[in-house]
Length: 367
Image (cartoon, rainbow, N blue to C red; front, side, top):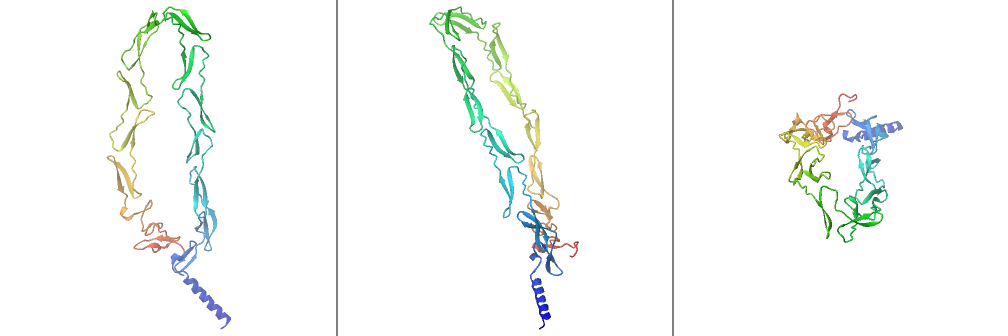
């Protein structure tokens, strides 16, 4: 046999091998398309392709080339975004610890780290409250020394410094026992007169001066009862009942005192949520929001309950994930959910299954 004949035979065998390598359209790679005329997979150039988990590319000569990094930005300021070629996008939570014991550290998805100053109020009037970045809250006892020999200086956690006068008593109840801040107790013969019209003044040798307050109890929880020291007459001052809340009606009950009655907001509409605006005191009627079970339905409130209604043509539609679609025409869900037609093919599902539901697009050249 001549060398020319040998070459011809080898070429024929090679063509047979290439032709037999493709059983059908499903054997084509991502950078190939099926040629129905030649019954082979032919190159599909200049179409997008998946280079790897972190890159897309462009098809050239049956290969995915020119890798372009994908975006892994999840629009969350609380994560560090990166890409792992084996896993794809990775969103790692960031640390918002500012190493400051005086802040509560958190993260806002829109703004990022938020460092909110903590409150160091220990509700103790006997301490000065502050914060040390390393230690946290610091409560320093205050000094209650009034530099007077006539008081015992203490501190009450509720009110603060208390300067309690010392008792200067010479055992003679009708002498004026006094105290000089610098010297201490001073005992002087006294006249029992406190120059207060609101007391009845007397002196008892056994107990000394007696100043009996005039009783001004009006028996009403709605007045502050006192005696006018200028005239000695009782004064009944109405108390002010105001809780600074616009959503209450403030009044006073003589038996119990202040009464703060919540405003009742009711528009008698079952499809609204009724409330009171704490800033303005006005009633707010918020419509009930109804959420349909999926995209194939709408939902609205009727009589206080949410009612779901099927969308038009629901008989020809199927729910694929969150998409309500027609499996006979949707090339991304062709015949069954998730069955995607390859490039150059359209969906014409009619009693078919899998890739068989996809047919070549007759409007493309070469088909």
